[in-house]
Amino acid sequence: MTTAQASSDHISLLISRSKISTEINKTGSWCFVRPGYQDRTAPCSAACPVGEDIGRIEMLAVQGLFKKALETILQENPFPAVCGRVCFHPCEGACNRGEFDEPISINKLERFLGDIAFLDGFGPSILNLPNNGKKIAIVGAGPAGLAAAYFLTRLGYVCDVFEAADAPGGLLRWGIPSYRLPSDILENEIQRIQNLGVRIHCGEKLSEDFLIEAKERYQAVFLGCGHGRSTGMNIAGEQMAVDGLKFLYRIRNGEKLPMQGTIAVIGGGNSAIDIARSLIRLGAKPIIVYRRRKQDMPAFEHEIKMALEEGVQIQELLSPVRIDQDGSDYILSLQEMKVGEQDADGRARVVPKDSKTQSLRVNQVFSAIGAEPDEVWKVPPEKIPEILTLSHCTITQQDLPIVFGGDLTNSNKSVTDAVASGKQAAMALDTLFQKGWENINDRLSECRVGNSPALSMEIYMGGDRKNRSRHIVAYNEVNIDYFQPCNRVVSLSVPLQKSICSFDEIDHTLSTTGAMSEAQRCFNCGICNGCDNCRLFCPEVAVTLEDNKRQINFDYCKGCGICVVECPRSAMVIEEKKV
Image 1 (tube, rainbow, N blue to C red):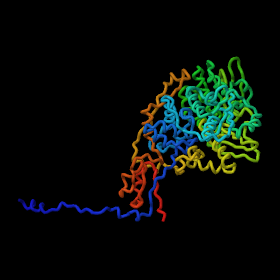
Image 2: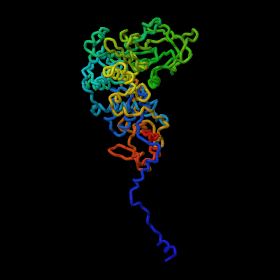
Image 3: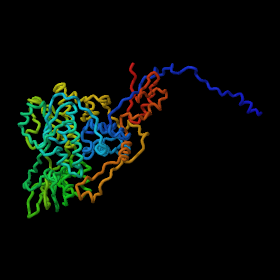
């Protein structure tokens, strides 16, 4: 036996071990700060006009819980399949993921969830409150009126919707071409609203007398009849121009309108873009004539981009001054404009450039410079004692409450803002009946999403979302160490040369695999998704999991804050311990 071997025989392998539990050492008494769980508000939700709970929607989608994800949308928006096609998705501009690589395709995911509901035949399990005995009349079955009926019905009211046209939908049916919004998608969404018990009466063109008669049958009226008349150009010869809104109506009504030659479209909004893209499909060569610069156009940026790709021309800084007929052609006289100062909304002001004009010879001229209410009584009054102007609607109270909403009161003429208007009207009327006129502002303020004007019906109805902090999660509050760069999932589209030959829908819905992959990219800002980092990293084993709920045992938490730092989604906070 060597000396080394003899030495090793005397080395003790015993390890000291306590005979009692260390739980007696309540290390939590050492702390002066405490961590805690606190769901916060995602920036995308605050930017969404209807305040959808987007982070939670994506979290459910990535788990394959599509029905729950759809129901989460339907808490705030009755038109997921529609808005998934036509919304200008400001949520994506606010997405924190955009600072990391690319924003989440929130719009495409909403469309996927809206479409899969009908493909798989599952309906929402959202229950209405009991009937409260009150009836509301709604004038106009566009997105604002239908949304108002949807949310009021959920709050226990009986709703009658009156529509002048022979089918409901308003702008959704008559003003948006089918290559963007097919009729069957709209029909499915409207049917869901009717299934709640909403009664829609079509072919009912009402007059101002209805407001007098309504007080005998209804407790309130919502006016969401939109802008039904095109704005005049106030130039010589404008009677020779084709009304753009009526043109879109005729196309959606199934009329065959072959076009040819060069056609001028006056305007810069979404209707002008829709008209020009429709003319391309009918065989014409449209030129949009706009008095400001292209970047100042109120049309949605992605729609302008699509129009240019399809072959629409845009001539900017030209303002029409007269239209003359020359045989079968038209001569459009245009005043050259130049950029001046900026408006309050950031668009450039334009002024005439000396007295210079130019002429444009075309086969036809279309007018699409805007729209206005077709009757004076549909405009909110200005000088009455009891009038309340909210972010998306205006309420008056004379013989009976009347709410003006939709395009009548929204500065932003979008489908999503119209839906937001109907929701706000429903909440305001319910508050009026439940708590009185003077409490409307305060009650609605309690339901705001973050610091935005968007309102949450789930909060209003006392759902779990009412416990969420209004703090909007910033990018620097997300622990990006837990995420890998990954490009957006792109949906397939009909090839350009084929798409401009028909009014068939251009974009395809994401596949199930694609939707789940895209949802997985979401940071789920401010929402706990059960990643368990807090429990795994706690050096004191002070985080426990019981009944799928994480709790902190403050007898042992020393307030080191590791759990807060390692939370990828900023769903935890650390605060000073209160004595």
